[in-house]
Length: 281
Ligand SMILES: NC(=O)c1ccc[n+]([C@@H]2O[C@H](COP(=O)([O-])OP(=O)(O)OC[C@H]3O[C@@H](n4cnc5c(N)ncnc54)[C@H](OP(=O)(O)O)[C@@H]3O)[C@@H](O)[C@H]2O)c1
Image (tube, rainbow, N blue to C red; front, side):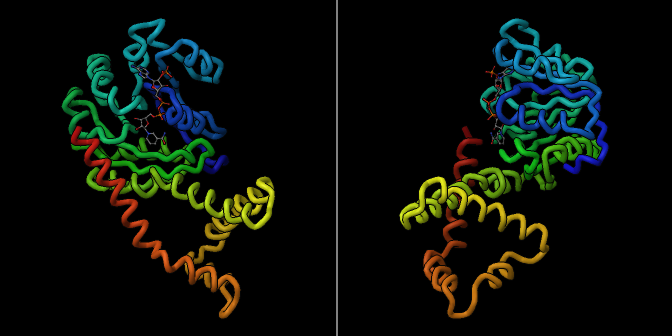
């Protein structure tokens, strides 16, 4: 997010302040973001205590207060559900009676549908699904958001503002959210795999692991920044590095033999099939 931009958000309860929850919390605590109040919950008191000193944050643990989640959602206008998918149903059943009418419940849990969540909550509660990715930790997430059947445009816009504190937001119908997850959700893993592979090639060419990391990490970062700042298509930027009959051209010819588009299509199809199997239980 642009630090200079001022963002105002209503009271938010974050249920499950684990890896993803804390990444989103860092966006809510960023300069330029004003949140009326932030309540977070964990199971363990020790985990909750690590957030107790954060400005404007009230941290509860179910270990010390059995009603921690219900307490956290009281009076909150947005409830962010960030526990593991298998725990979402029990959690929603637990807080259902404590939600104020009109509350927006947004879940980042993979595979738990809006219809399932709506069936566990009063009709007056709007449900939104969101699928962020791990670069949220550095404010560079790409988050897909999908409306439920009771979501008003202003609910979605509120959720968009929330996730824009940690990066970019793309609105898609829920039917496309699993597909989005195979691209941007899993995507950082694909990028790390490519980085690992190129680093291995560098080490095989005699560079020390530290040198290889500098060469490869710097190249990925530099290329990504060049892509963003130039506004050019990646194919055009690739052409600019690839002189006819030059060295890069030979390398690209070898990589093309692997038919990367087909390989990525198969990889993302496999991820999608797994998402459907998990959702089916
Ligand atoms: N990580 C990702 O890349 C990613 C991306 C998109 C979506 N997601 C979704 O984000 C959700 C969380 O994933 P994660 O990686 O952040 O998992 P995680 O680190 O295990 O965080 C889950 C947190 O939930 C807390 N918790 C569990 N049961 C609770 C309860 N009844 N009341 C209050 N807090 C409770 C746990 O507290 P304790 O620490 O005290 O046990 C833990 O901190 C998942 O549904 C996942 O599908 C993750």
